[in-house]
Image (cartoon, helix red, strand yellow):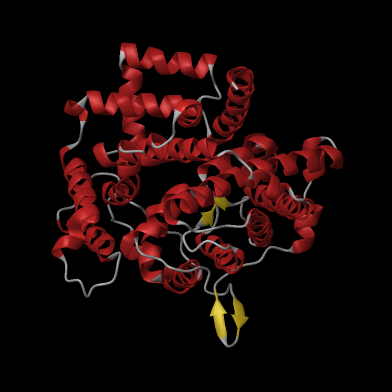
Length: 441
């Protein structure tokens, strides 16, 4: 079970190496597996949490002035505050309040996030140099380049719209696709979705994911694949580690006093502003977890507890602080792949973390793995729900309008903006329709 969930972590290995140390990520995933109530939920540093933390802390200027080591301590301190704020919100009942979100908004939010996952996966599947090549092609186009430039200038918060524009450019310019990555991507997506039909039924769920990844890696080595690959994985410090029950876990803990001494309050102008910022971060962060859990509840009948998941977020962020990681949140794409590979309990998350910890010294075998193959795993997890959004199609009347509007706004802006707009829009629709109902009665 953990073996197949592990494949998703390989899909995001590049993101993890840029956001936080790999083994540190595995550490808080194992703790998250203990406290979460969802068998599919996967947490980690996401692009959203990394960017939010960098923006709140003004990361670039801090690194330029103090260096990366002190910035790690600063981020760790912020993770600790976000973890504390999450726990406080769970205790005061914010989780229950959040759980009362209207169903159309939940469905629309999940759909918008799925669209975001899809458009993010496509560049590595169609272009040899992935997103960088796509950005260059879009910028060199007079019409598409103008659209993207205007979006960034006039609607900087609409980051999703820029990604959607790149997605549409990709679909309308097949002549720009790189042949080999495209073939790997299309064949991989097809096999992950339908390969189980051709495999012995005795094989466990997720075997097709391993086969796609392994075959693509072998192809990359044998034929000297020149497209985008996972790349070098950082070496481990042989002297670092924690000894538990006779086992050495190669996890390095930060000096807690240095975390406490980090100039975090100064970055926000005082502790009151720091607490407000950390609380808002925790609340916004929880939207991702809520959207994932709500989606699994409607699709798979898995009930969830908002206070428990909010406390889970707090525990994960607290552990993330101890190992120098940015705040963590639920990941829609990783959770979807976790469900696809057949996980049935929280044990999968814990086993995945342990596998990461003990197998990382051998993970250099993934260095030549084509990103196109990994993108095919991501695509196979979301493409059906994006092309045929059954949950949204079931909505009627104003709920239909509310759900689709929330989904579209989420896709073209960001999860935070989309969810907030969806709540406001749904409320306005209900207020506007209530007088008509009274009059008709």
